[in-house]
Amino acid sequence: MEPEDEEYKSRSQQKRDYEEVKDLVSQLIDLPAQKLKLIPLADSVRADIREAGKMSKSALNRQIRFIASRLDDEDVAAIRTALVEGPKAPEAKAPDEAQLLGEALVAGDNDVLSDFIEKRPGIDVQRLRQLVRNAKKERKNAKDGKAFDALTAHLKAIE
Image (cartoon, rainbow, N blue to C red; front, side, top):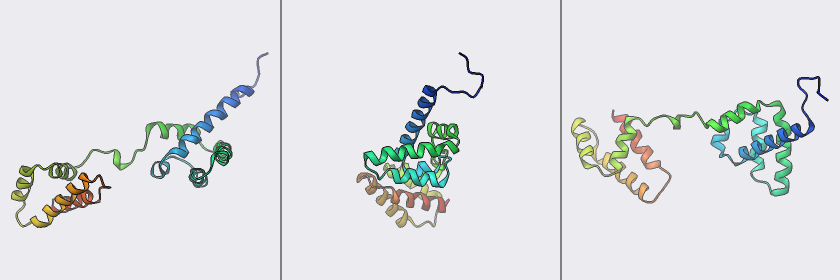
C-alpha cells in the first residue's frame, strides 16, 4: 500500500526524526554559552537551552523533549550545519603580526625583542619588558591570557 501524499512520513520515520532532533538538543545543551550564541536560534529557545544545563536528569529529559518540540518552528538544517561547521567568529581567523610577535617575545626570543626595540626608538622599553615578563609568568602558570592580550594590544598600539 503506497501513500499518495508526497509529504507522508510513516510513524516510525517520524519517531526517528524526533530522536534525531532530541540528540541535536542534547548537543546544543553541551555547547558553551559563547558557541551557543553563534547558532541560529530564537532567543527563547536559547534561554531554554541554557536553563536545561542546570537541571537534574529527569527534569533534563523533560526539558529536552520540550525544546525538541519547540524546534519545529526553527530551521533544524541550519542549526545542524552551524553545529557541524562550528563558529565563524573572529577567533577562527589567522593571527595578526602583533600576536605572532607577542608569541615570539613570550617564547623568550631576545633577538626579536632587540630588533623590535632598535626599529622603534622612543618606545617605552621598560613597559614592553614588563608586559613580556607578565605574559611569560602567565603562560608558566597556565592562566587565562589577560597579560598576553595586554602585550598584543601594546604591540598593536606601537605599530
